[in-house]
Length: 497
Image 1 (cartoon, helix red, strand yellow):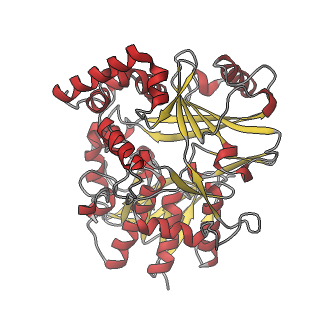
Image 2 (cartoon, rainbow, N blue to C red):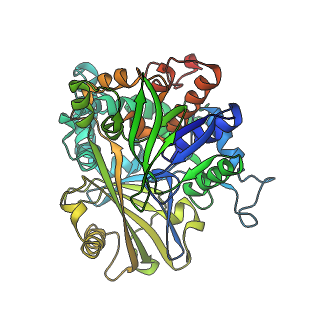
């Protein structure tokens, strides 16, 4: 008989693990998902024929195994391949366009030194930026904060223009109060030097490998016809077809440990009923804070419990606005726009028409847009009524000159808890939590929240793939799973291949 591998969470990590367990091992996966939808933050929400991508998900990875995995699920659109007009199961090849909106002007993002950027900044600001960058090259700051991390790579003037306020919107704290780890993970290779090298390579029409291009500088990505949720719903179907189980609205409330082994997990169903589910191995993508609090049958040291309990998260709200195209005042070719304006709470805009026209019910007459706000559960933004929040969002879009009056035809709001693991609070003590959890032999932490690491989707998948490889090969050392997307071990350069 196959032994049960119980998995907490039906996001990218949990679903990848389940499918790979079926493909490579004798373990039978059983997923318990707290919510009513597949895909976690990579789901695609639906509203009156329109679809919303929660946060924007570019399908791009330097790891070829991940790219192949995606395209096994949904083949890529090519001249000789599937035609999106003829089939639903297809990946589109999309052009990446994203910009910063600052001083009511658009600037390239990633930051470029193009003529348009220099003209938008003006001569005085351009000179200030140039001298600021030279100063940062000669006088490196100790990277004790995210602020210093950015200043070392871009200089203080450019940091203050394009990074400072947006970063504070995302995290709710000034970058001087945030650890540099977030920068090391998300923009580790990005700097003015990298931008110049990228511009030179483009001007010389030199073809570059994935390893040579910083992820933040990519020009193209692939994308499911109906958004990221389409892929994860397909994976869920494959898991069920292979004999795996997926139980929705089934929340893990206790992880029962005996002699350093997880023997069962207690879940609570939508009606409040609790039951024990025996397992031979437990793969957790639930937040570390919740995992440690759920442990039973093992004494958790006080310092570990305190460190886990203090791990912070940022929550996320998207407002979907269906806009009359005739009343949109700016050309918007972008997939997303970073809003650096200080007089609004709005953090980022998504233009769903440009991600995939198939996300939009009426592409001819409407612009379907997502307005993104970052908050903390229980704060004023989180507690605002849906009607008031939509009115505020529509008003801010008008205030910054993107749309005219009465542009909104319809709207909805969507909240996401624990969308972003944050790098403050007790994050500096996360090593204590990891070391303790690793003493539970058959417990594996995977995914973004499972490792409290702000991973991209492909990195979350890689944690699951590494975990399955260890289980397949009988490897008990969990360091390879924890090392995905770290400077020490993740595949960011040819040397690490």
